Image (cartoon, rainbow, N blue to C red; front, side, top):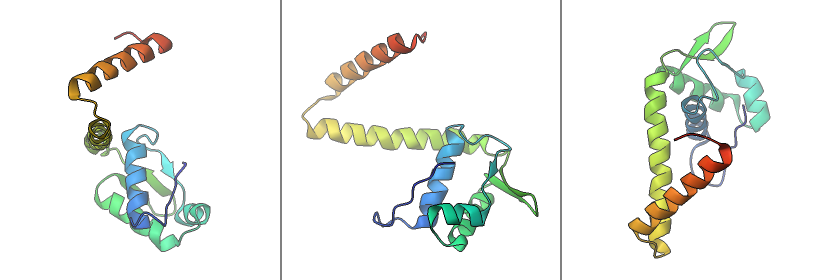
Length: 132
């Protein structure tokens, strides 16, 4: 499980952990039943306080995304799927907001942006051999 923590962006570390774990679940990189690293192990990898990891795990457990089995570890719960869809939509919405803002600042109108998006989709589809 690859995670990146920034101490410069002003976002609390436990919130960054929560966001990244939710993203991993939503994207399917952490599926139902997947075991997360033990608190101490993840804290050592990220060079952060174990209490910070514990807090993030507790919050994710309270959201129903994780389950903790005493002595056995922390796992992605089977209740994660409804939130996974909502999280995917939120992630894409954030990226779309950034794209629309960037397009506006570059003087690209909505129709031009849609045309570019369709061209990029066609190019990706052709490269990967995917059917629409």
